[in-house]
Image (cartoon, rainbow, N blue to C red):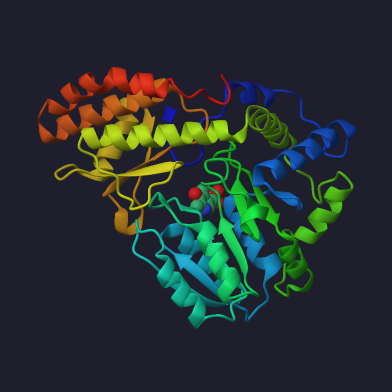
Length: 386
Ligand SMILES: *Cc1c(COP(=O)(O)O)cnc(C)c1O
C-alpha cells in the first residue's frame, strides 16, 4: 500500500531499519546522548533558542499541553476555526474551562487579516490566540506571521499559539524571529516517523505563563519535563526507538538543510495541483499548502467510492473529506518519504478512475501526454533520504 495521506507518512527505509535494533533503556548514557542530540536538533528546526519538549502522545497531546500549561480556567481565548483541527483546539480550550471565542471562517478559506484584526479589537483581553498554520482538513494555510504581529499589537498579553503539525518542516516558520509563542508539531507528518511523539516549543513569555497557569495537569506538565531535560532525562519513560528515529531524521534534516524537505514538499504540491487540474480535479483551497492538497471531486464522481477504489484496486491510501466535505474532496499529503513512483501511480490512478466513472478515455490519454514532463519536474528535487 502506498501511503499518500497527510499523516502518517511513509517512513524512510534507513529509519525503519533502526526500529529493529534492540530497545535501549531510557536511563542509560547511550540513550541520553541520542536524546539530547534530538532535543537540540528540534530547536534548530523550530528556529528557537528556547527549550522544545518531546511528548509521548499524538499531535493532539501537544495541543492539549499547550492549553493546560499556559492558561487558567476562565481565561479568554480566541480560536481560529476553519476546519476539524481548529474545532479540536477550541473544544479543548472549552473542556479546560477557558472562555472561548471562536472566529469561524468558511472551510477552504484563509483567514482574512481585517477580520482577524476586528476580532482582536473586540477581544483585546484574550490570553491566547490559537490557530492552525495549515488546517489539514481543508489543506489551507493561514498567514501566521502577520497574525502573530497583529496579536502583539492589539492583544499584547496574548500568547500566539500555532498548531504547526502539518507545517513545521514543510515551510519556513522561524519561531523566535516571528514572535510565535507556542508551536506544536507531530512525529507522523514532516518528521517522517510513525505516530506517537509530539513536539512543543514555548517562547520565553510562554514559559513565564507556564509558571502561573492554573489548569490542572499531571502527565503533560511541561515545567517538569523541561527540568528533567536539563539533566538529559525525560520526565517519564519514553519510546526510545522513536527517539532514535527522530535523532536520525533530524540529523539528516539539519545536515542537508531543512530547506531541502521544504523544497520537496513545495514541488510535490505544485506538481499535484497542476497535474490534477489537467485531469479535471481542481484545488479546493483558496490558500493551498505545500504539505497537503485537497482536490475537489469532479461533477459525477462520488468521492467516497472513488477513494475506496484507489485504496482497494490501486493500493493507494489517500484521505477523503470530513464532515461538510465528506465525499467532496480527496486529500493527498506531500510529507515523508514519498517517491516519484508513488506520485506517478497516483496520477495514473486519478486519470483511470475519472475515466472509469465518467465512461471516457480522455483522462488517461491526457495523463499519457503529461507523464514525461511531470516526471522530469519531480526529478528536480532530491528526497531527504536517497
Ligand atoms: C495530524 C494533525 C493533528 C494531530 O492529530 P493526531 O491524530 O493527534 O496526531 C493536529 N492538527 C493538525 C493540523 C494535524 O494535521
